[in-house]
Length: 220
Image (cartoon, rainbow, N blue to C red):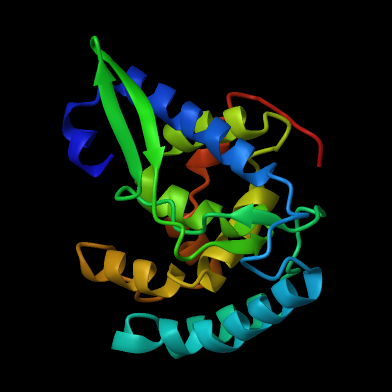
């Protein structure tokens, strides 16, 4: 999708985001009974998230872009994160749906989702772990595109403050989250001087996402 962003009209981009939502919904619905490539029990996923809790603050401390005070706040917050906030059994996750792994084709003037590649970093875990690379990579942190994606994936999910906080936590815990975040801050990102958690949340998963709901309310 990276190569076509400059020429995709907004309407087509919204349709692609929705089709991606349907594709990810189908991926997450795949039965795991016969799937033997990855551990699929809750204990394995919980241990993976525990290890990420131990590693992510150290990874975020590189380059000195985030203050010691903010890193301490991050450490406190991620220590309380539920490994399975969706209250669902673990699902098959691609875990790296970036702009380089979503393929498009143009058919008679209409753009189609044609492929989702590179499952090398796949996990079996909670869907909240999936959102980071989609938001940060495939959809380029565009609130309208993410709303289109999420409504197609599951329209009952409320895109509210609680969603943003959980997505924020899993961005920090994602295997590629810290490097994505630091790279974005280095490459023309805002100054983090004086930031607390609220400012960090607003930059990474902004309140504007809630406004894009247009009053849509789902179950808590």
